[in-house]
Image (spheres, rainbow, N blue to C red):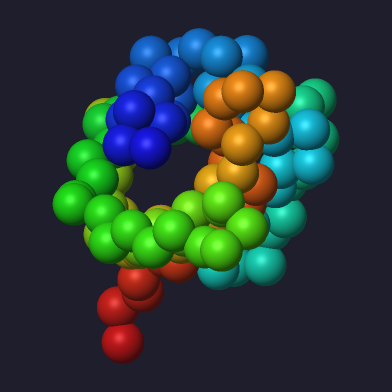
Length: 116
């Protein structure tokens, strides 16, 4: 499970958009607190290809296994944008599921913390 989350950061930070989008299941979706919803392999790949260069650091996740075998996870993160120097913090809220023998994101929601 933590490998899936680590690969998320490694692939997007490394510019590996196709490998990043393959971390999502066939119906997997990425949602962001600003209202964006990205789903489907083509949309996910395009999103990752446009991602700013930088470094994602994820904190230790809180994990809960569901009766249906899916996994829920909550983890803090920090992103350092190498292009602008901006630092973004927030929380990942994940639902992971098993598909074709491997763990994938069914949903990842990025809750970005904004200054008050």
